[in-house]
Each structure stands twice: as C-alpha cells, then as structure tokens.
Image (cartoon, rainbow, N blue to C red; front, side, top):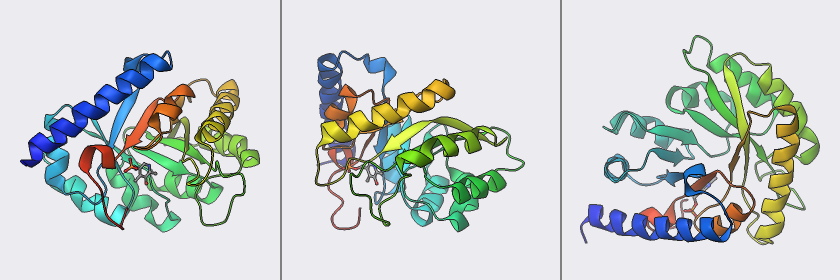
Length: 232
Ligand SMILES: *Cc1c(COP(=O)(O)O)cnc(C)c1O
C-alpha cells in the first residue's frame, strides 16, 4: 500500500479511538494534543504526517532526531524530545526540540539551562515522574519526593518554562494505578505552579486509560506508523 494512504488510514483509526476515549472520559478532544512518535521512521514519514494534519512529533534519540529535524521539509512542527537524556546531549537536544519531556534530575536542569543561553524563546520542559512501584535505576523518571524540588529549580531557570509532567506506565502493572498516581503528582505541582498544566501520558497501548486520568498530550507511535521491530 502507498505509504501516505497507510498513514492516513492508521491516523483516522487512532483519531476515532481518541474521540471515543474522550467521550468515555468526559474530556474535550480539543484539550488533547496528539504527538506522533516518529522514532525509527524516516523524515519522509514526518512530512507525510504533517500533510495529514499532524502538528507535533516525538523522538527519543538525539542522534536520530537531529539529522531528521534538518531533513524534514515541514517547518512549523513542534518537536518533542521524549527519551531519557544524558547531560552531555542537552546542548544538541536543545537545538531541535521545542519541548523536553524527560527532565528527571537536577543536573539535567542545570545542563539544559546552560544549553539554552541566548535562545530567543524558552525551552518547554516536563518533569518525568517514575510510575514504577518498585523503581530501578535504569528506568527514567524522578521519584515522588523529588518532583517539587525539580519544579522549583526549573521555575527559577530563565531559559526553561515548566510546562507540566510526564510518565510512562510500567510494562507489567496496572495502568489505572500508574496514571492516577501521575494525575496526583500533576495536581501537587499545579498547586505551586498553576501554569504547569500538561500531563504527557498514554502510548499506543494505553492512551484510553491515560485520558481517564487527565492526559493532555498523548505520545502515539506504532498505532500510526506501524511496528518498529526490536529497536524502539
Ligand atoms: C516509543 C515511545 C512512545 C510511543 O510508543 P508506541 O507504543 O509506539 O505508541 C511513547 N513514549 C515514549 C517515551 C516512547 O519512547
């Protein structure tokens, strides 16, 4: 099948599911942003999606996203960095990303602040919260007791704009539990920082559940673009 038609068909199906889930969760579709996660897929797919009305794309690896960002012809897209981020990549990521979803530790706030000096518009950031009941070192995300401190630090940084919170439901676990926890963290942060009102939650397999718990930004890859194989 022609790739444009394939993407259009998938996108229509995903849009239908988002609409249904919004109705079920008593949410307005217009309060929800769909981020198409284009990692592992070529720049040409990003352009096809832009032609189909996609405004936001998500990438998780700097080394892939940086050249892709340059190659993509559609210039008015919003680019989201959604992957775990090393401090030594902060500068490079700040050059292509409009929003960084994975801020989970103080040294990353410091590195991003430094990386955006001289930039005209602030870099939007989300605090990634660890939703695993038994957090391990290698999964991304700040622990519950670190969230407010991170929010303070980001709010004091000139070049960064604290936009909200992000979470990934643990692979083996209860999605309702994970996303309700995230919603609780989000309202704690909003108590002190009312403008930090984004909740980035929900992927291909669990976005309907995320919408029940206030998700404002869905990160959907495989349902739109197809299966990535082992890499993603
Ligand atoms: C890959 C990825 C997604 C998209 O996952 P799908 O299951 O393909 O929809 C969402 N969020 C993050 C952080 C990812 O790395």
